[in-house]
Structures are given as C-alpha cells and as structure tokens.
Image (cartoon, rainbow over the protein chains, first blue to last red):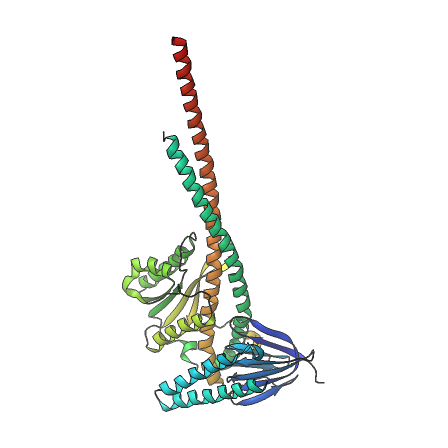
Length: 135
Length: 291
C-alpha cells in the first residue's frame, strides 16, 4: 500500500474532510488525475465531478464537487470545492435539479463560447449522474 | 404621587417587558452559538484560499498582465463602500457602530475629493446611511427573507460588486462589517476588497515552482472573484455572530434594568400603601377619640 499523505476537502461553509489518504482521484478541468504521496506541486481547477479518496484507514470516500480548485504539494492535497456533497448523501433529485439548471443555461446562453461552456457542464453533470447511479 | 392602581399597572407592565427581554436574550444566546460555529467552520476555507492566492500572486506580480481585480484600475477616484449590517435592531450599538465607521470613512474620502458610493447589505445600515447619503446608495441587498446564511448569499453580493466593477462604476471597494471578538466585544472593521489585498507573499519564495492546469492567468482569473465572494461570505458570518453577541448583551442589560425598575417601583408601591394605611388608622383613632 502507498504511503499516506494529508488530504483536506473544504467547502466555503465547512471543512468536510481532513485526514490521511493514500490515493485521491481528482476531476481536473483538463482531465482526471490521481494524487499519490510526493506528487509534484500542481494547482488545478476542477470540473463538476466525483473526488474519489482512498483513506489511510481503508475506506473509500466518494464526494461530488461542483467545481473548485485542487492545490497539490508534495506534503498533501487540499481541495477547495465550490460545493461538496458526499456522494452517498447526493440524492437523485439534487442531480436532476443541477442538470435542469445546466440545461437552462444552455438554452439561455447568448453567444457561442458561453453555450459551449454550458454544454460542457451539462455533459459533466450527466457523467456524475451515471457515476452516482453505479456507485 | 401616583395612585396605588397606577403603580400596580406600571409594575405589571415592566414585568411583562422583562419577560420579553429575558426570552430574547436566551434566543440570542442559542443563535449566537450556532452563528459562531458557522463562522468557525467557514474559516479553514478562507485561510486556504488566501494561502493559495498568496502563492499564485507572488509568482505573478512580476508579470505585467495581472488581472484588474488584483491590480485595480490604477485610479482611486471612486470608492464603493459595501456596508454589511444586521436586519433587525434591539442589539445595542451594533448597527450604528458599523454605519458610523462607514460614514466617517465616506466623509473623509469626500473631503479628499473622492466620489463615494454605497452598497448596503442589511436594512438597518441602509436606514441609517439613507439619511446622509440618500442618492449615493447604488444598491441595497435585503437579507431579511434568508433564514440561514449560505455561500449563495456571499456569491450573490459578490456578483453585484463585479457587475458594478465591470461597468467601471468604481475603482476601489471596501467592505465594512463587524468582527466578532467575543460576546461582549464586536469590532467594526473595514477591509479592502478590490484591488485585492494579498497577505504574506514572502514565505512562498523558497517553495518549489508550481505547475498550473490550466495556465496561471486562467486560474487566478477564476480564483480572485471566488476569493472576494469568500471574503464577503466570511464577513456576513462574522456579522451574524456579532449581531447575536450584541443582542445578547443588550438584552441582558435590558433585563437587569427592568429588574432594578421593578424593585424601585415595588418599594414606592409599598411605601404608598403603608402611608395610606397609617392615614386611615389616624382617621379612625381621631374619630373615636372625638366621640
């Protein structure tokens, strides 16, 4: 098993998780990446998706984040999430509401770049729904 | 000298008032505990955020292309004061202390020939500032309908600030709120929002270079607005805790004052009653002696 490092997940409202993890999968804006101990310092923005943290005590936590930042240093990983909900607590209606929101954004988008961004978001949210359905 | 009946009524009414203030004090104490917990829970995010920002800005300051939110517009002619107060009164000097700080700042800026605009959050501050600066208040955010403060409110206010900034309505934004020091001490505070104040960039010098995904400018452009929303949200939470702290103290005082008043009135009542009994006795005795 890999060495543990400090993993922290904070949302504006509270500190969700702060403990040792051995591996964390982060949904980066430019592609998913996995953080292990001793990772090179990376600062990445997140897309809506699921953070999968393998904790040192053997539990795998899956958390839905709605965008944010991941600050990776060799000592640890800090995720500043715009909004974070434990996947287990994330009900189907919550995702449905998010998807409806995104669909409205697509419909309301005034120019092409905004529309593309909104469509990307919608796509990502649908992936989350699929992940939650299987998880 | 008031009649016995009038005194009895006074005592009853003060007793009723004391019951109300006592209840309000206890409600405030309970809400204070929750507000304090919420403020404490929001602190880690704000701390991490400013640490990350300091890291980023430290590396970027040499470059010329710093975003406008960080560097400002290069002028400081028009100031926007974002004044956060409570929605309700009965909290001692809480609202007026924040409003006074904002007003003093505004008057000082005006003496220096600057233009001052206001964005009021909370009805009480709006009511106070409206008297002096009626046509300088550009927006008023009412949070009365909000039952529990969430990040959404901070975000909403931040959006209004950005909209004004993008429209070139102001150069410098300052946030006014009350910092919660303890239950009996709340300090009205002014905090600069735009251009962003970055604390402690020096300590990051020795660290390894970061890799950015996407590039630095995009991240910073994303992070700066978020940071402002976080600061506003933090201020709202601090304010909320301060409000209940101030209200608790004010209601505690009111309860004690009502108690003192009841004691005084009761003493007065008893004296009057005794004087009347004595008077009646004298009348009866002198009547009997006369027969």
